[in-house]
Image 1 (cartoon, rainbow, N blue to C red):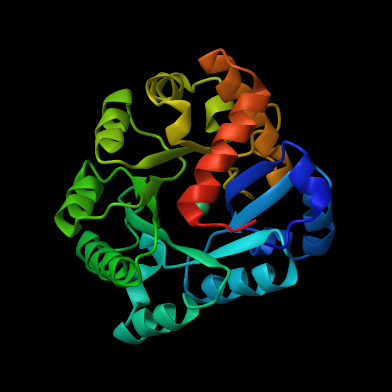
Image 2 (spheres, rainbow, N blue to C red):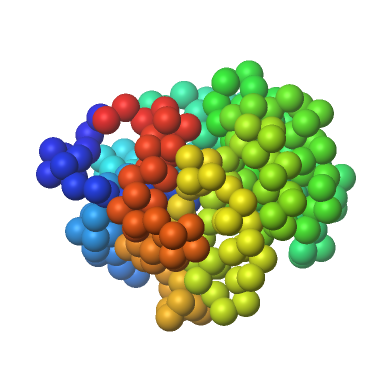
Length: 265
Ligand code: NI
């Protein structure tokens, strides 16, 4: 709805998952966002990871017309969550530029938050998404199927698994559930065999692309600060894997995400 004519006429990219509110951008955030705007990224979701970043994501969406926001609490940040936070998320979600609840899920890689605590607040945020009829953005790291189990239990229909790191088998299971699957610069890494096998199994019309910046910088920038201007490299790699043009990957993944997040241009 706020995208300029010039951008609409080009085959622009949609970075569906970025964290531009991260403190790694504190020294030059505005300059980075100007660079992103000039790099053919015409839409971008700034994804929340806690209560503070839910508010910060909305602030960025208010400042930049091409930025949309999610609200939600990442599993590793659920330790201090309260019922008041759920009510606050509900209020924040009413902002016209909030397009999803996320990123939420389970992360058993780090043992900083008890699994029972993570599951309690994952369920509570899924209930909120259902009540609001909003899509959810899932962070699933080493949950050994528990994430999918809870999504089934809650009957969640509109869902994307972000920064997918699972197997081709798991990807097929998610496709059967009607879910979307999103890939980062991880597909460009030298040890990306598993991600590449998964990409092969997923039809283009069920894929999104994202940076997850400032993390997950694609090759040859792996380990450096990532930003949304690099989402092009994810599209290029997926095109190579699937044997289609980069233009087609950019267009199809963008249209998938525009429909999924309900963006009105
Ligand atoms: Ni993320």
